[in-house]
Amino acid sequence: MRRNGFTLIELLVVIAIIAILAAILFPVFSQAREKARQASCLSNMKQMGLATRMYLQDYDEAWFPAWHNRPEGNGHWFFRLSPYIKSGTGDNWDTYRQSGEIRICPSGIARRFNYSMNNHICPLWGDWDGWRNYVVDYDATFTHPAETIVYGDATQIGAWGYDSAANFCWWPGQDCCYWGNFPQGGDDPLWRLLDRDLSSGDWDGNNWDWCAMKGWGQVRYRHNLTANFVFADGHAKALRRGMVKVPWNWSITGKDENDWAR
Image (cartoon, rainbow, N blue to C red; front, side, top):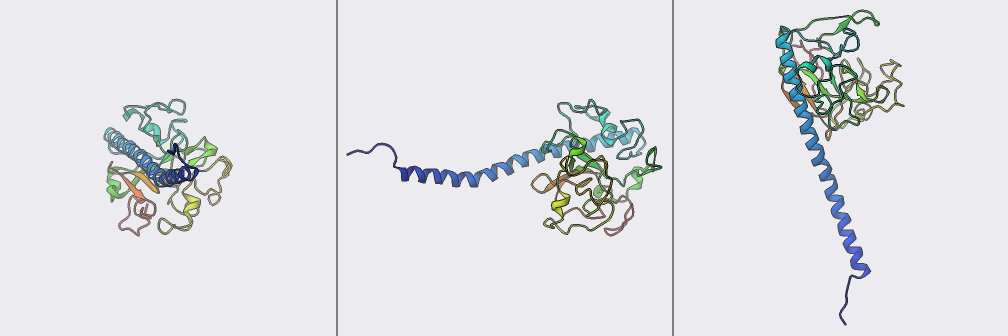
């Protein structure tokens, strides 16, 4: 007698095969999707590098700090680049979330600013309430511009609506901002504290205890443990976690890879 359809065992075998294929292919698809997002993010970085170089040409090669209080509310580096960006030219906190905004990474957990700037460039000085003054650095100040990071993927902070800090920690990758231990390689357990986005419950946004603020002002290796960076000469590059040379890639006046000069 001719049999129609499948037996229960045959159906289970087919389901098992589909499950095995799905388990194999889904991670591949996920990695491929993230690779595409990384490419889009790197394109953003290249445009920011070009915009920065255009800015420097207009201002006699004088750089700007990550943020300061003048002009009021618009002194962050994000808005220094606004006139040099073709699309998404929001020049204040009310207008920057626009279609085509290049200062937003497609892999970020929220459509907010999620890039930060090297805090060594044009450091601020003055009292906490003012921050009206900063050291003016020029292109000539940089001893190794092709290897000095300017911008990069950064952790997002729930207490600030998931914007990133305008600036990185003084030496990103330390246990505490501005001092502490450096993770050794990409598998160091300390990365679990540093390479993460902060929820609104992790930090209230006002408690400036540097050692309590794990993850604040850190690099976010959101692209399959890889982050994108813009360097002082304007080029952009992706680096895997653990590959950034500390202090070399953050220092602007160092003479060698172990020189801790600003």
